[in-house]
Length: 126
Image (cartoon, rainbow, N blue to C red; front, side, top):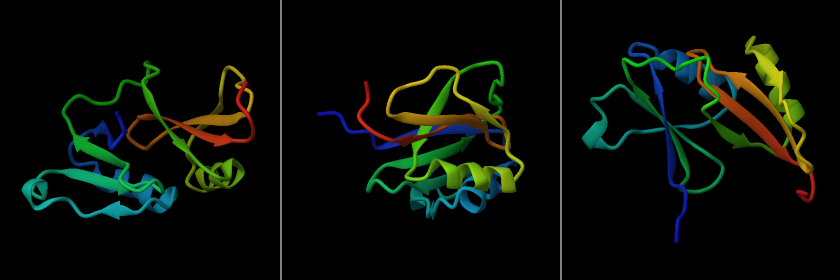
């Protein structure tokens, strides 16, 4: 059995507040307290609405590469509402290049350059 427990994403050192602003304030995700063993590190963790699945941000001297398509995907209930939230924080939004039946999706980049897909399941996938 394999269950996704977390996704780890990097951000430039010193940019933890930018991560908090985008994911916490901008998207409305809930920040999690760090375990005591890693509380001294510049990490930021967020809960998802799926119990036990987390999004971890880890400071790294290697910045996100804006030329790559590496990304993670956040499934939401209301893509229009998330699109509006992204507009409020002036986040870039691009349409997905290929249409997937039953999956409405957009892409954005967070404030440090990570590519994020936002997806709403709208029906039976083809």
